[in-house]
Amino acid sequence: MKKASLAALLCCCSVSSIAAVPDGKIEKPFVIGNEVICLKEIQNQITPYLRSFEEESGVKYKYNVKAGLSYKDTVGLRLQINRVDARLNVRVADLDYYWLQERGSICQPAYMVFDRSE
Image (cartoon, rainbow, N blue to C red; front, side, top):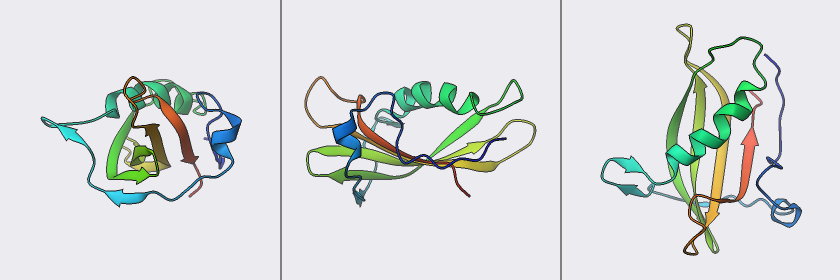
């Protein structure tokens, strides 16, 4: 498995949004019913990206919500992503995912901070 540390995912975000990556204020995740807002969309976007680093097929990941985040006009989630196939439960990445609070942009990333280092 390749090990790499990426400052930001370039797909889905502009160069200007990568320039300053803040540490968000830690809050409770946004939940409606029993579902964390935007978690499914994040899984759909990030899982294929993670799989591209793996050599085996059938890789599965579990997304653990650590906290909600807020910074200026953005909100987000802090996630720990574990590989859980083949009886594993190994942390492979940490992700801070921020999106604008504006209507119509919910779940669309303003920027993401993605760290695969251990």
